[in-house]
Length: 142
Ligand SMILES: [Zn+2]
Ligand SMILES: [Zn+2]
Image 1 (cartoon, rainbow, N blue to C red):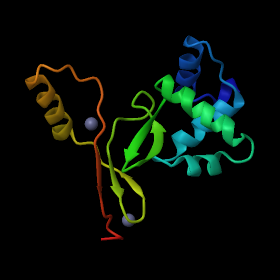
Image 2: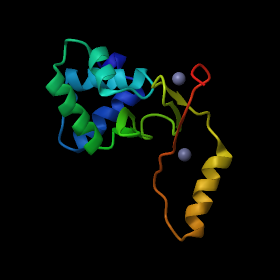
Image 3: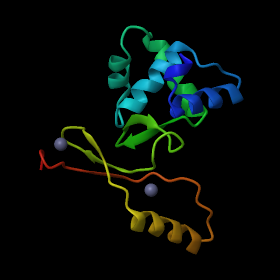
């Protein structure tokens, strides 16, 4: 198992260990599915993890990952999708299509990021993280 550990898995293992948890096979499966796909719904995640891990365990694992800052929720209207936190994947934003429900990652935009930072600094606010989700209609649906 050590031989196949990616840097992300090593980081996952360290994060779990620091908080008194171990890297079990189910936790590793859920993490692999999170890292292999863009933002996904809980239903998609459950389907992708497959039968090896039962539904209740996946919910518990996601709750743990959220509590430890490994995964985060992406609010889309009154629903949400799940993805890895900025510690595990490069910081990015999304477009979400209101019609087909697909989520598209936005390319990195330094001007946007600098704008958010300068807005915060102007208000004497110390920014730590942010989410910016844009909803509308995708090229196929508009
Ligand atoms: Zn669409
Ligand atoms: Zn940003």
